[in-house]
Image (cartoon, rainbow, N blue to C red):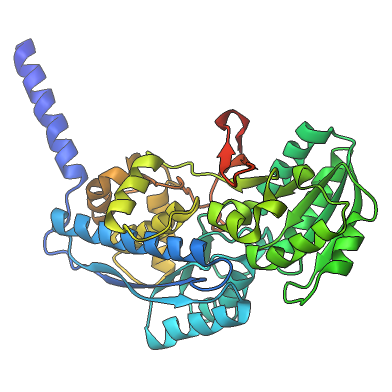
Length: 419
């Protein structure tokens, strides 16, 4: 008969051995070499976001590479090229074509915008069976897009944001108030304007005017007049900085528009953008934007800043980091760069199938678990993705931000809205 001490000793050894075996990599396992390309706006009105996301993606690949070396896991995960799409669908198609045909990438991180994402997917990545993880594309149509399971995203759908804006408006003006909506005519603007209209009316509110403008227009005085002819309780603007830099002054010239009664979306959640458009236009406004649901987000920002000291920080950068890390882990897990294997493994490492939670701060453990073929939940700097059947992340967190008289952006966590 064993003594209690012997039983405890045997149990301790067994547990320790099980923990070691959990991350055992098969002997002489051959690694895979994953080549990733990025597509983001590196010039133009959305350049700050694009540069930040590209830098974060680079940091992600570098972090996984370092973890692979430390864990003695064979193979590589590299960003071989980064392309500028200027947040323009046609240029995004050209960028994706170059990455796939010339650089021979197996996966793409980006684009930033919905229009660029849908165009690149339809024309390039889906026909060529290349996996793409969009970093800030929010159009709800992406969920239903026939992508042969190759299109994913680490940013929440505007199906969530429409509800968030409606909730913020209800808190500000009541459920039966009247709003006017102004939006750019593209995949982002029109889709969110339609979602918001549906949510607002369903909640008992009224839409006085909905004005859609061509983002390439030279002047916007007629659109501004239509948006302010009848004064609403609040305005909602769905636009990008480069266009609103022209729309905003036109609204101000009407003498009827009030920035303090205006809600924007995530595109204006940047102090550099506020400064460029002008405090005389933006001061006192509010907005909604997705917010990091990641683990130790402040630590990640500090680590990235140390690794990439010259990159301007934006609120969404962690999305690019997580997209890249997840692709790298998926390649290690599936031991393949083929799309079918990558997408299956993206769900295996993102938590779709459960498993132990491993945060980005322990990438070495994540790499070992992936190499051992385990299912686990990567807890990122931006999101715990848990990709669903459509490639969307499960859950979302949004903040309500305020633009001060000095152009500083603030928000109160107690007003955050979570799904």
